[in-house]
Each structure stands twice: as C-alpha cells, then as structure tokens.
Image (tube, rainbow, N blue to C red; front, side, top):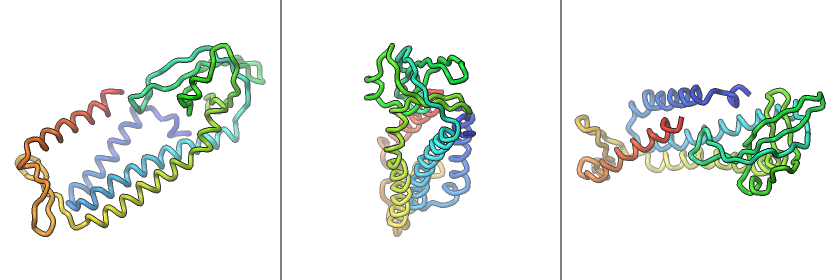
Length: 221
C-alpha cells in the first residue's frame, strides 16, 4: 500500500528522476533510433505494470481487511482527477461499521461513467470498506474492474513486445543532433532523412509539443 498512498508530488518527482536517468545513461550516450523507441515503449509497459502493482496491493489488502456494508449515497459529484485531465466520478457515502462507527466518505475508485449514472442519491449501494487503509470501494465498480483487469496485463505485454520488435527492425537507423541548434535528423547507411534542420515547420511543431507536454505534466499539479 506504500505506492498507493504516495504523495502525488513525490510520485511526480520519482517519475521525473526515472526519465532523467533514462536520458542521462541511455539516450545521451546511444543514438540508435531502435534503442530509443524500445526505451519509450518499455517505459509505457513499466508504467502500466506499476498501475497493476498498485491495484494488486489494493486487492490483497481488501482480501485481508475488507468489510461489507450497505452505504447511503449522500451526493454525486465530479472531482478533479490527480493524474488525468478528465474528472473523477465521485460519490459521497455514509454507513455504520460493525463497531458502531458512522463513516461519511467520498470515493471515486474504479467507478465508470455508466455506474456513476446508475447510482442515485438517497439510495443504498453495497460497498467494501478496507479497515486498514480506511478507503471504501463500491462493490459493483470493484467487481467490474477485477473482471476487466486482464486488459492491463495485455497492454503491458503489448507495449513491451512492440518495443522489442520495433527496436530490432529500426536498429540501424541513427539519430543525429545538430550541436548548434539542437535539431535532430535520422541517418541510415550514410543517407540523411527527416531532417529538422531543413524544415522550420517541423522545428516549430517539436517546440510546441514540448511546451504542451510541460504544461500537462506540471500545470495540473
């Protein structure tokens, strides 16, 4: 549960360190396009694997500490998501534990748009409460996620395999960098292709994309 409860700022810092290490120890030293694409796809596979690990820790904790209750839906609302630009489907719930404690808590864990629409304020829904982490999960949403989580395993395998195949296919293509401008170009068997130095449009598009990614990474914190 350590990673699941990690502070979002610390999580972003660790991700930044990870990608800087990839740049410093691999991309800065080797100019193979195949290696770069392999690293890119493999990093995505690692990210998916990280999400899988987090969810598996949740399920293990629920198996050990989970308690079933019927919770009253007090409120439905859309809340700001931590890792995406879309809103989370959130429901505020109220229920009483077997120990007599009344808990009012909001949750968005695994709740799909369809499930969110079906939940009605003032009605009760079955929930599973983790007494250890003190997080509540809607039964319907949790069970649907469990039945569909094979998709995450398939996605991790796909990106890892695709990265390996693409890396082998284009391994002879090299990435060159103009030391004065930083513009990149591809070179294979002494022939130059996709030369940014000769295309102002490609340079502008690259710079705009970099700025966009920076805003996505840090502007939503």
